Length: 183
Image (cartoon, rainbow, N blue to C red):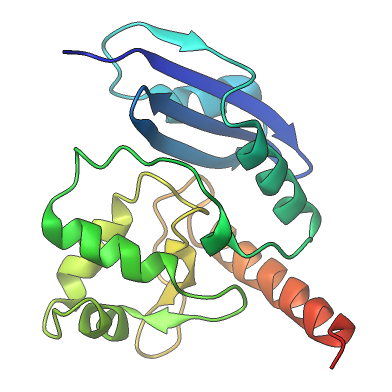
């Protein structure tokens, strides 16, 4: 049985961000682009059935994303929203679950991520899974870097420049958060 597809695109201070979901949960997100139509194109690529716009789709998640892009620290691991998992292999689920645990302001290498996911010789396969990450930002694949510390390709709009911008943004958030912690 096919479920109803819904999407929303909302404005952030980085541009337009999109969410796509079915009745079982979130299917896809897009990182911000400069305009609504470009975000819609990235968000709905490959959708061959009707998709209904719903501005009230996951309002708490929209609030989190807007706050994050303004520079507010929110622990993304505490967000509670359903994710439609029927499209992922067991391997992909394990990789994405470990990637989701990488803290804001931190990075991990592809080989370290592979090892933590239980596949120590699968760094390239991990890279392939992350290149197809349907939930960028929520599953922070931008925090995964090469073993030599370089930022490599990034499949989101803007490519490696976007990845670098996100990592720099998160370092500022993490630094600001550390300064304001009360012991």
